[in-house]
Length: 175
Image 1 (cartoon, helix red, strand yellow):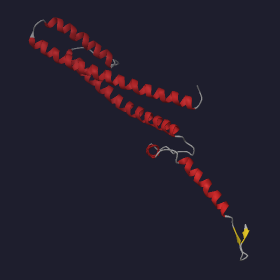
Image 2 (image 1 turned 180 degrees about the vertical axis):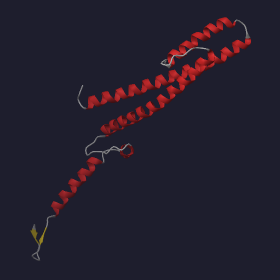
Image 3 (image 1 turned 30 degrees about the vertical axis):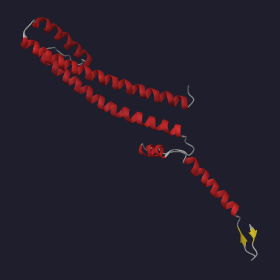
Image 4 (image 1 turned 90 degrees about the horizontal axis):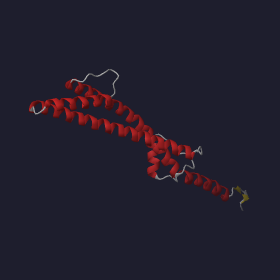
């Protein structure tokens, strides 16, 4: 406190400056994240903490997105796999292949393929039968491609989740 000429006391401006510079540093710390990173964090429901670096924020974003993709992929994967299973059972019934209740898609597709090979050998040169078998082979190939694509997508999802897990372990110093 300083005494002015009129006898009144005044507070030092340096104390006010010190307080505002401390507030400025706190704001500066929090704003080290780019605006796009801050927007992504907010969109994913993640709160930015003081002192969070851009790489830490990016890692949290990647982890949240991987979790979302895993949940979405699981839901889509289950329906897609069940659709492929239903289509495979339908094709098996058309071809005349018996299907057990607990058979999975790959078993059914293998059985259909084996049956179609046998039917092709028996068909000789009958154009009507060959045309029908060609249609069945086309459907089988389509189902097989869909199933391979589904398996590849699931594998990619699990690999991404494993990568996020490894990054988290490294960040936490657990490895």
